[in-house]
Length: 182
Ligand SMILES: [Zn+2]
Image (spheres, rainbow, N blue to C red):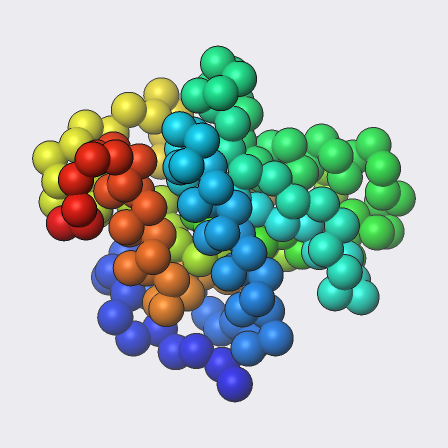
């Protein structure tokens, strides 16, 4: 089964392609990790690194608040993990699944580590749209570059429509821990 791109924000339609049904559990795990991050007071992001044979090699969640390190993004940690533990061939054959599209810092780390494909559940554009809807200012100091702006030629898949509401709810819960979902 493949998922179509129905219901995506207009800006995402040119980047979204398809994701196989067998890959959805990896994205569900990313969203679980994002929920764990929110429960700990961290930003709602989670990622898993999957080898060519489908084995989860490593997983991480955002730890910006709990470590006080604004670079403690899961995608960055996985790129550094892979860089020191996997061969160049293993890295190139691996896929990084993530709950939210890589920021430019993490995309650069992914590129330098020579990792393979990226599949993300929700896009940076969706996050910007939700913030605009909630009247929340965009606080990133980085230019809003896509992964492919930073790493040309890399295969990148996302967003996957079925995860939009879950990720949106986690973003809301992070900002409004005492309020029900909007
Ligand atoms: Zn990042």
